[in-house]
Image (cartoon, rainbow, N blue to C red; front, top):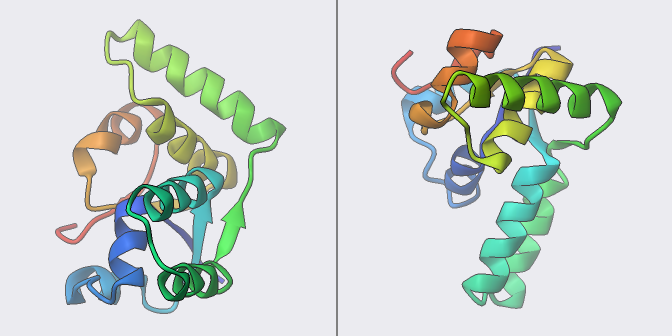
Length: 135
């Protein structure tokens, strides 16, 4: 089985049935995963945007169909390594993006994202494999 982590932007579009054919085709046949960070970001949006019960239920149902990757020691060590290395290169990355990348690297899963600029530094320096609509 091929596992792929979907970034929050991909998850959001998928939940709204707005993923788009190029990305959908690249994810066909893969088991979708989200990180604990994406779960938190999605619930933050639900609260911030005052989602109603029906929309929250749709989110719950969608999350029930994906694998949730939680933090563990391997992920924490990967996060420490890649975030420190990015800072030493003079390219500190946002904390949430760093955790998502660390989850992918610890599990050796590719990351599907529309926000390439958020993760290209991890791809170039740490071996993060990216799946994008254009690649």
